[in-house]
Length: 582
Image (cartoon, rainbow, N blue to C red; front, side, top):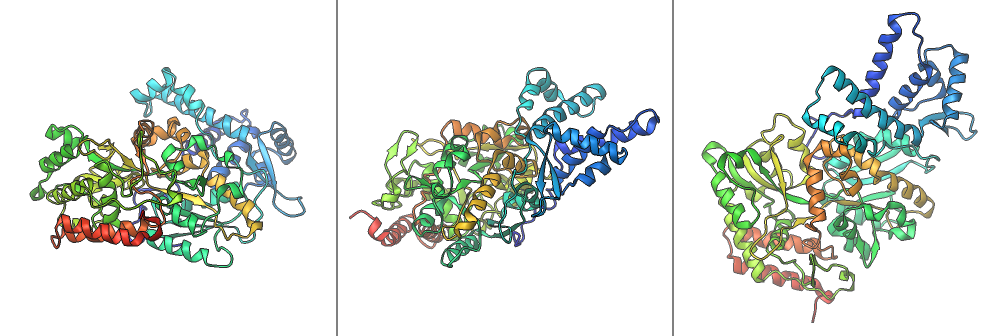
């Protein structure tokens, strides 16, 4: 598969990151060895030995056979065989045929076993901490004595295997973006193959190449992929060009539990009232700020654009190697996104869509009749704001894009940065980063008269419209697994910092992993997560590019703000064609 060029997370994320469950399993295995080696009178516990081996295989993505479980029991064959049948009869093991004859089976933990294991693993850890001290801190103690242990008992359980393995020639083929979350999926590929009972082939591209490949794939007689990842702004274009199949054409959408998705993320997956993908990442662009630097300077977290400029001015000190802020300012697509989001900070979308309570109405975009709104008062204020930001930005800001703005923040050279949560692993998982444990997360500070907005980004996973009908059922099952709460929690435990579901954000283990999830959840409940800043119309990719080109000339001093606004408006108007108003 193709990895991200020049943007490796290998130094921060272990390829085989262990979950708490694996650590407890290792402890039980070692503890059993110690006890059984102490006295000849202590015999092996075959039930426990087999269950530990089975769970270890499941979490590590390794195939477990009956023979392997019998060998792990540490008792004679006849006894082990009898004990294995007892475990199966208790409903703790599911058997999956490995051959067409059905005479060979692989063994998998049942949902009952996984639920019971999640409960007991947390209790084992807490008991050990209470008895021997360990790493227990005040928060752990509070969790245990004030209800945390009960909440942990309701944690989302690990993934369980499908009762019937997917039978699809060549395995499940997936096209994704080369970002940290999808790279975590690739790291966990063996485990997902165990869950669905099929091989998985994943290809990853940069954002522009991903869109090109998805459009090229739609022109083929049959799709090369069973599932493709789609950036949220592309939904309208991909629906109109028949790149994606409407979900209700392939499956019962209620299986996905739509109410569990963050509202903005789920709505953004729709076009013309129909869902075209399942949210796989909901990753808003937030303002990241160094809490320690703000505290040292006596600054409050910025709530308005004026506050942000004042904080950037105060903290900007190039002689000491510190700059006030970093943002997407590279020419074209990168800066274009910033322009649209900055206009939203001043209370206006890039299209003349109607205002409603809590934002703007995007439900009728498929009917057309919209036009660009760039050369406006809000557009002027956005342009002037970006010019002011230049004063407190690094010298190379006009070449910075997605990763380039986060890297210097992680290195301690930037006090604030606009950035998507999916890139947080670059500093949240690197203990050597000055931003490690010192980052605060805010929605975009608002301009005068506007409300704070956290523009929603991320990807949905959808089914190509030209996928052969005989492959659709398997694609549906794989899609359901990849976007399930259990899978989302697993991604987070292995380094992802994106999440589309309320249930996952409320999981106690997830909340312990990063403050991002509680912060984003709160923004969603306050209705600050919005996708109208980048309305997913078919023309949006070109509108973004136009804004990114004209505003870049403005920021370089080649043109004035007035000229940049007029030129961008004229080019966008010409682009619209029949969709624009007369």
